[in-house]
Image (tube, rainbow, N blue to C red):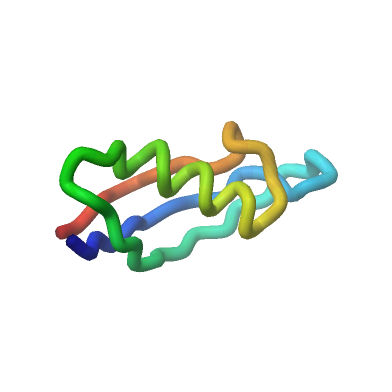
Length: 60
């Protein structure tokens, strides 16, 4: 299943506040926690802590 995740990044990797919003498509399995997986992947991609990633909306 493919879902579209709308997210915000609230700080950069140095801890400086920022306000970046975006959206990305993710492929997820049926029994998978979508929000946790997306937060983990986005934090790794942007090299920020998971607490800096805020999921605003999930579309199927």
